[in-house]
Length: 251
Image 1: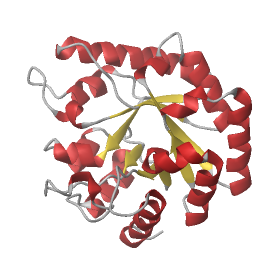
Image 2: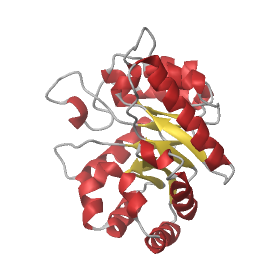
Image 3: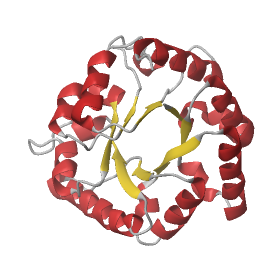
Image 4: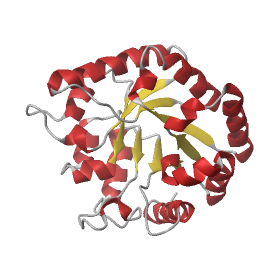
């Protein structure tokens, strides 16, 4: 169980090391860094790895702008992720050209990135938002990506955005055995004033069914709490979400 550090983005801006320390002290076993990590120097990255090791937690994966997986930048992404001890370099979002061919081009870029990463012992991944579950020319983009990418590429499922798009996360997991190797446990409420502000376990997601599918065929290796924000501070939100996860899915 880890925390996508976008959940504590304001704290992270103030003091990355203190924030990671606080997350570890809550009981999280790992983290997922997001785009700002790409600006770190090699020495900063090594210092963060030392802190992770000292705390006994891991960097499971990183979230990356699509450009970070381009031929021009993939080398830097590879090197930083190797220092951090990460396993997956995840494309956090994409901006395809219109139509099915635009999504096929994203799939091609993921395959090319995966070839570069796998030779170094890393793997590529893709993270969905709502748009990947909204049909384009009668096909959901997420299905185009799944069909046109190598099986080694992780399809990281963001549960909340899947729900908001009107799709069934359990059905999606079952349709893609072995590829849903991590999930963002982001809840979502049908009530517009709540939306993504609900804490994990307080929204529309049927978590027990999702966990069952993920752990029995989905291929899940790790879960990540991700929170857009709530009525609580970022760190208190992260703490409460972990507490709820432990109640819903006892170790």
